[in-house]
Amino acid sequence: MNRTLSALVLAAVLGAAFAGGAQAQAQQAPTAAGPVTPAPAPAPAAPAAGGIQSQNIFDVKPEASEQPGYMQQSNGERIKVQPGNNAPMWRQVGEGVTGYSSLPKHEAPEAGNLIQPIVEYPGSRRTNAGEAWRQVRNDWLIPYGAALLFVTLLALAIFYFTRGTIGLHGEETGRKIERFTPFERATHWSNAIAFVTLAVSGIVMAFGRFFLLPVIGGSLFGWLTYALKTIHNFVGPLFVVTLVFMIITFFRDNLPRKGDLNWLLKGGGLFGGSEPRSHRFNAGEKIVYWGGMLVLGSIVVGSGLFLDKLLPGFVYTRGEMQVAHMIHATATLLMMALIMGHIYIGTLGMAGAYKAMRKGYVDETWAREHHPDWYDDIAAGKIPAQRSAEARAGGSTAAGSMATEGRST
Image (tube, rainbow, N blue to C red; front, side):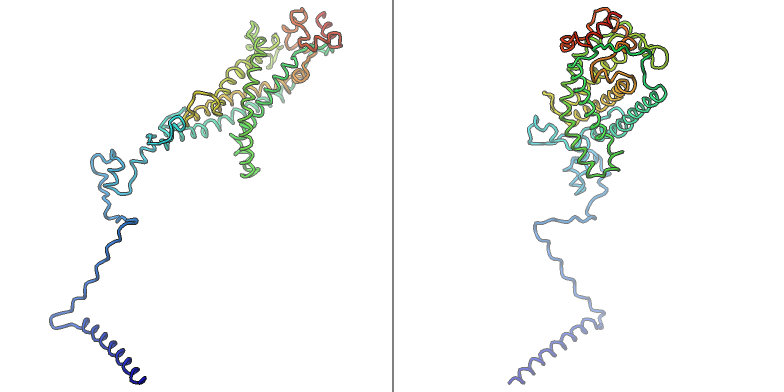
């Protein structure tokens, strides 16, 4: 039985193989009427509904760009003639066209604008506002600002090594005059510390990638700049308060006097000749007060508070912040260059100037040589030699007696 079943299966397999070979030979063999036409290929299956549909590149109409009004087409019109071409949408984005946003206007005034509109800032090409600001910063503020600070520092160094410290011509008498009261010194030092902190942090943030980043590496430089930026933002309001105190405290003695023009014409006697006469503050110090503290300081403070978003009534858009930054950076660089000269005269440039601000007193000879009009008013009794309450209370002390002797000289 098993042999019979095996024989039947073998016969069926051999029969099927023979039949298939015969059919293949019949399809390939030529007939008298000519070659046999091959069977047609099966039709492709219909694409399944749904899903991502591909686009045949040969179905796109490249000649659509030659049609009239092609550049004025909306994005919907462009897709009909050139599927996948979203150039009209991105052209509107680049031109600053405002789209739709459901966010409140007072909270997000620029939510519908991906790219800022086309502008032309001083020193930039005509392009979108973000790129124009970048050009002003990188092509003008950074290189020329660094050059201004470097040239100022170089000029002060050359002057110091050629002229040296301005000393006294006469001998000190030992009799002291109170030049700055404790309140004036506290106001000055608090403002000076705040200014130096802001200047150092600003220099690192603006120029640090050129001289610090290659030395300390990206990780440490990133942490340092973030820390300095935070310090900068918090010290800024402190500088505002101390600057107001500085302006009020030293306002009266910085009013213009008739001898100021002569002092300026002679350059303060720095380039030869005797030092021109001046009262408590000379014309150079008054320039620092009016130009550096009042004018530039007010611009720096106003733009800085704007950048910190501390001024009420403003929307603080990107364009306004960019303009505020350019104004802030320009005024700050000019103020820093001016204050560098002030710091030089108050430390290395003139003997006794730093000691006067640190301790409050100057020698009688110092006052007579550098500020003769001020000294004459003190000697005449028009101005007290000891102005602070502490000094007046100790009038019988050695300092008080020295000042009295000075008035009688």
